[in-house]
Length: 161
Image (cartoon, rainbow, N blue to C red; front, side, top):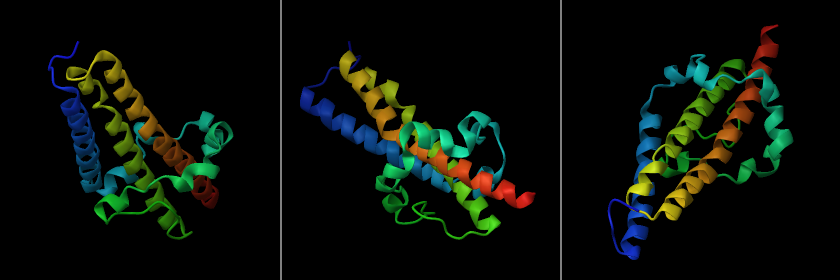
């Protein structure tokens, strides 16, 4: 049972406004984080050996077939680093691209976190629908970022040898 009881139309409106707010606020905050933070090798963004430099994501989800159809968040703010295509093939350009995939991945992980709040004003089953929405609308983007970063890291590691 929701803590706040509202007419159905207002619950729907509030859900739409709340998700819009969370998505935009989280995107803006992550956009404002300095690139230097994402250039570091941190545990949160490492590509694990079981991901096989991104090949796992291609094998499981056929990422190459659909990743181009995802919307790049930079269109929301009409600024930022677009990840629709590489900006060059030099090692430094690839490292910047990899750092930007970390920014995008963080944005999408954080965008899942507000989902439990929707249980406060929605019926229980709608609360779970909101959790499903959060996962379904963010996990594809996370998979693509990890796929792209795994491939880029494999390329830049080859250049070191």
